[in-house]
Image (tube, rainbow, N blue to C red):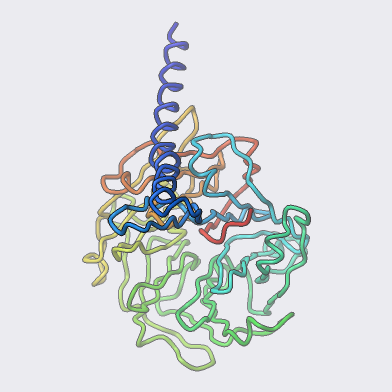
Length: 388
């Protein structure tokens, strides 16, 4: 009888969550679209950008980006509609199973909609696939339904690579890549990124004093300052924009700000870094306590060991941990947060924006986990173009 009661409670919780997500994202979005079309005289329109002839008629915002995940050996796409479904057993919409892949670690889109995959390769683990950066065009992505094993349009390899894992574009179109194995940050220029098959050192190599220790998460804040997470230790470095190198070569920089663990597990093997629209810095802790934390802008000004303003802790849902060695984190256009669990049970936790204010050991709005997901050692993630 106890087992039946627990199952009923779990089913009830899932039904409530599904209805909550469906109402907040699905039904309301549909209603907003219908209302807008009716007000405009039923002239039709895009479901993600319904326009109204009456400027006082609200347009309900909906998720308009797909979630792309570097999945150990391939890259997956989850559609916005899937992120609103509330199911825990969900196969990805599309897969990129390129034979070039060794160990995809990160994904990032450029301004043209090209997908760049940061691949650590297998050499560091005794294999034969060299680390590289791979670019796939929007046309190739659109054809994944019929050809899910495309050859990269562009391949960039470098003798400097050891195990690159994450990357971010700066405001000049440079691709800034962290190499966990080389303890360096590499900068590739737009000209280098345009080469079809480049085998060269990056234009700029950045080292640090004190030295990087497994640099991984990388992000720019609103002022152009560069932030790098040291996955091999318990620190996050900031480098002011005015101190970043502007010419080719190798340069050693001293961090302008160093954030350290607060003694309670605030920074433990930090993996991914990302800023929200309020200027808060979010970081994932790949080691125990397996949390995702937010640091307020006021705590980013000076070196220290700040306490997080918000901490998302692991919960248990249907016997599955919601956060397990979290790696990639990303925000959608509504401010909802996706967090990737890189350890068993491999999964994707999706937190509604409203859940990010207080934090705690809360159940995400959506937890994607199970055999049908094909998740296998997933790592980095990003929101990008929707490919149907």
